[in-house]
Image 1 (cartoon, rainbow, N blue to C red):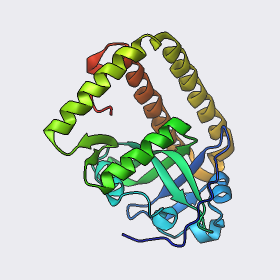
Image 2 (image 1 turned 120 degrees about the vertical axis):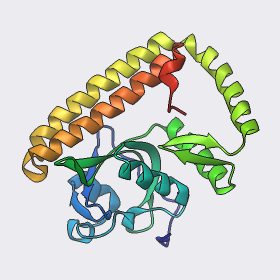
Image 3 (image 1 turned 90 degrees about the vertical axis):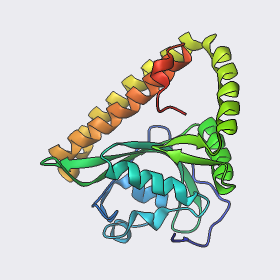
Image 4 (image 1 turned 180 degrees about the vertical axis):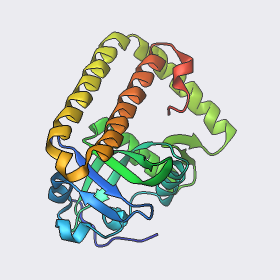
Length: 237
């Protein structure tokens, strides 16, 4: 795996409402990068277009995460995860990455990535997963954490069951937050539709809309699971 060096301990934090958008071909070569991507990464548009997307890969991210990403995308499914990226000067920034295949005439023609600002809780959880993955204790499957042994999975299930019971108490306010987030996502889609139409094109904007709707669906299923719907928890961490 390519190691992008050097790295610093300086974090660049995404702005609230900032959305990083990029598009690649089947080999991961960048064909489109929006201004937010350019601004936070420190690369110019000329330095990004035509380069592999791993130009922003941070060495702290376990290789298994990218293997899972590509395996999921090539199977025609979207992938969501918290990713640490490297800036041109070695600084880093965290993103909630939502990546989806672009279909043309029924075939995968490329990939679209939409990155949003993650919460500090999401970042803390991702750092723990990175550490466990480096130790070989967990792996990823379509962005979800899989424990290495059945005993670990059982212990994780027990701990999560207790957490689930505690969180059911606050399920109603959580549902309200998720509904607000879903509305915000759709509003962001409408804003992107106005700003990016000339750059991305109508067909690719349709794929972007589907990616954003996938995020809203994932968050809705998470809320239903916390509220007691075990069936909604399939494929969720």
